[in-house]
Image (tube, rainbow, N blue to C red):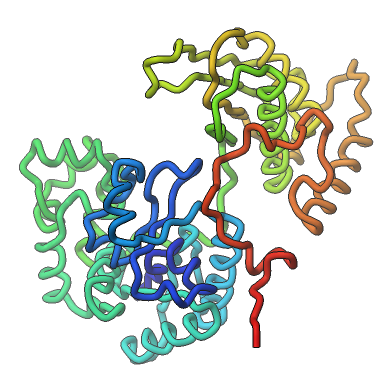
Length: 416
């Protein structure tokens, strides 16, 4: 048996941990630059506020209904996520962290009452973290996903115990809601009159193999109650890394673009070193606001293959700025920029250039020290000067809550 533990309305729940006055009130959390709704409380859903909806389009409703609105506080959300996952590690023998608010637990071999176990887990996670969770339990990971959706509609726990129970669930699950069936496969299945998970289990194996490859067969097998998708206990290294952001306000300044691109390149370097990888290719792009037809439009990107694979921040910034020089045109109001690094390879396989003059060992030691200082004292405590302060182009976060758990200056104050 597998359990899927999912934090309910996670970003909203994180905001409520230190603001109990928000309980039973409509609350939404916005995306970068306070643009679209990305998390909603049940009360906000009841008002008709939709996921990914631009908040400015519902300004009158938000104001009239007294909806509490927050900017994304990823520092707080990441820390509380880690606390939830550490709590789950203490109660389950094997765990796969699937996303910031979801984890699969392997319950195989446990001789327990699953209902009582799930009730106890909900209490433990709530007591330690203040985050409400839903638990779906089933013989496979795919069915556990379906069970979790049912749990959210009930009391937070749902268990698929037998074939009769499983058959009932898959008959009432739309095919586009099945884990692993994406948008394109959904269109293919609709064209073939496959509308439910049950319909999917009736498909011919040869057709599935030709149209949806091995993964399509695995989904069918899992829906029929036979586990064939194991837990992923090791988080795979990324094959590409991108750092892209829309600016808080548009800018014509090349100096500000240099600050932003340098900062994004530095972020890519940090992520590379964290997973012990090197990059062979770097791409930089800039573009104007495509939604504002009153502005002149410009969209340009350029890539370069690095002479030697690297994760050195100084090198990445150097080449990123060179690419920016090549694509920048004056006179445009730029809204977004980004740095993408690809062609990743393990650091242990690094092959030097015989004629390279750069003292790479010196820069490697510098990176270790800088990463250590930034991890301990906070991001950008030490950085390259060209990165600047970021105050003139950083994300708009006008409704940002405190980083209650990670910053001494923003901890909760209790007055007695």
